[in-house]
Length: 349
Image (cartoon, rainbow, N blue to C red; front, side, top):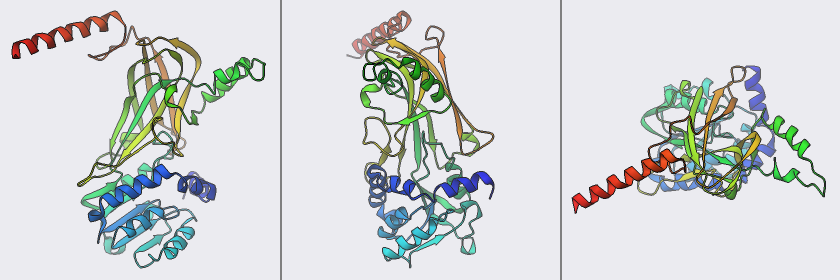
């Protein structure tokens, strides 16, 4: 095990990290509901839990009737997982295995029916644990086997960042704008992870990346690039780009369960990730905001990504066909499309 992996797994021996995850009700309930809604997919089946941690997901699966659960955990927290398994009387179903998934060997090259994992990091990809899930899928999952979750989406939207701007305009009667300038410069080296309130979002979210866990490759995740035209849905102070994600679980007969870190949803331990801009811009309702978002895997640490935001001139970027911004060219295009739709409807009547 190299130094970076050793440090990564050792960090998960801090019980405060597991306390944070175990007290995340939105996270726990999404997994539990997804498993309960798909009990027939677990009953009597063989399941692999990648990065089992304290073992809560393995217990959920055992409660749903799985015949065998391999709970694979590389850090020393596997000892707690063993105790949790015994505490819940599932030692005949759940086998805790202390190893990296890349070193796992199942009896007689056995294949599993389902892979379950809580692999998501900040802005979804931080920590690079999805690589291990992909490895598990390619080496241990039966053809047509299931993955929980089975897809994930990263979103972004322009936002206000009052804790980096507004909060420093008056600190008990003292202006601290010079301090906030240096604070933002520091934040430009590392995105801010904090709760973003719904009223701080300035425009509709755009999809940065959609991942199908059944097909995605590790190479697909090395570099993600997206260019967006966001339209302000209100007046506001444009101070950053907010990033969040959702995960969707398989569904057989019910509505699919979605675990969301959207600012509109119940807060999770992932919060939201914000790239803070060095200077703000005041925007009017319907004003376009153009930017390019780039997520690149670090060459020095494959578990980390560099996030870059490039501000673009809305005048020089091609707008989507149905852009709702207040620029003249988009107003004319909307008028032409509306006229075409009206004429088409008249002909059909």
